[in-house]
Length: 380
Image 1: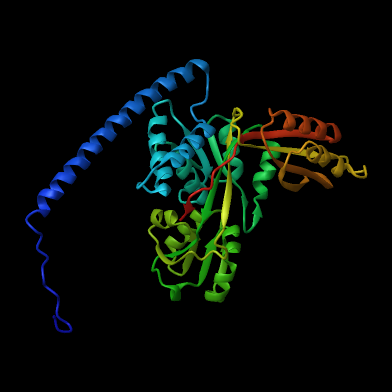
Image 2: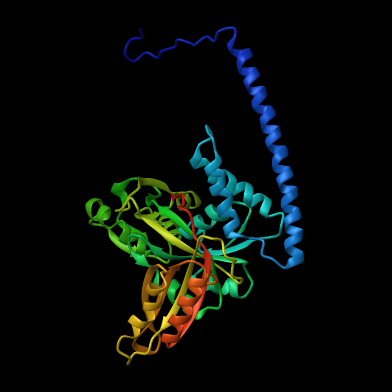
């Protein structure tokens, strides 16, 4: 037995059979890896064939429903012991790499690099896509409208702080269509140059992130000034230049700007999740598990106008998952009503409900019918 302060220098001696046994197993793993590489290249050749067919038919490279359903089916048939939770990240990168053989995919997001929008885009589209940061949510819409990007990613709702009003307002004014969604579990980190809590005099982040960490900040940094920035990545940039500033953001932001983690998981709610919308120029077809988003206005002076707008959905058994209102620009105390409902606009009951509601509305527009997201990974 070693004495206190002395290192234990006892070595472990393998049995004579250990090395040959390891060599046999490793040789088998090497064989399997070569077989996997062969299968990946065969998959790539088939995806190239798909790309040629799509190009001839003028179809989009990206198919949200196809990619969602593929991963869900792989999860369902996985017999183990390969971890079920690893299927999505592994196959997301396989899909991303082979999708790039069909054609380029440029994705605009609310930047700079290191934001949760960036993380959601990377998690959803994989590393082979090209990511284009923009300065504002409105710029994401414009990038898609002007064909500077095939798709855009914008936050629309958070389980702690509610809707992102800038996204709703931009949806009303834009001609893009919603073609998908991403759900990302958000875990906030407190980041600084030193990684020491005692050095912090100011805490910077986007307003929603500051609000989502309110309880932790009041308990641990009540004295620190709160500084609102345009994004979590902008806060990380600020912290990188000032040792007295700590930023609330993702681990991705910390890595991008050379910051140390003071504390992880400082969000007040463990179910803190942000929903992102995917913006495109072409409406996706029915997938069998869809959502539709529409915006309506009603006649202000008519009693019961909102009730009549909503009645067709209840009568026809179309479930409304969300109702949000936003003021109409230039029209005091008049509102835009955003409805999320289950189903695709081409489904018979949904089409009838939308038509009947439109007949009661002053104006209306379907913003998109798109495949529903599966629960997302954790955004760290």
